[in-house]
Length: 293
Image (cartoon, rainbow, N blue to C red):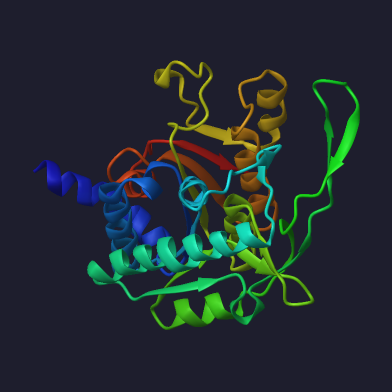
């Protein structure tokens, strides 16, 4: 009987989101644990079979760093951004496009989905420009200096044609977060930003960001203080009060930008919980933080 009740609870949401695009950003535990990746891929396929149009963007920072170490190259970061020289860019492409993307496609296809791996370079999905040098303070002298981040990009434009073509033909697009500049150079992009920008361009109903935290917590040490629903005009107070800080700020900014560009709601959820995507979409209370207008 409990199973029947679950299905009945899910029905209004299945109807509401039928034929709507749902952008899912794979990150955190869902990227580094094979069982979690398999489970998330299965849930993504289920969304497709109940009538939604899932689109996936994945990250891969930890895997890139591990590959760099194996090749004798030390990762360097400025303000959370990876300094990406030409050699590092080759590793980024190898890991994102050659390994992680194909692994996700394989998992999606294993569960009956029509997964197709693409990158931001395909059909110029993501046009980007090189990010300006960062100004940093030298801790030893207190003096400011500029650091060139190398082949790190900022998104200029998203051309959703290839995404629309794939979803219209029942494929699940799986996107690696790299872009191309006007000279054809490959640029390393932030996966959260890529997911948010594409979500806005393809008129996604939802943006779901999988992380390794339950969502926005009033007390970061107490999962019971999860804030389940937030309006976009409440975010600035949460930042000012220190409730949203550090690595959560860019994720929140991505959610805000997506909503400003037409996405109806954005969700930050814990990818460590099995079937977290389904629980967030198909249950009344969800499991993470929902941000809406």
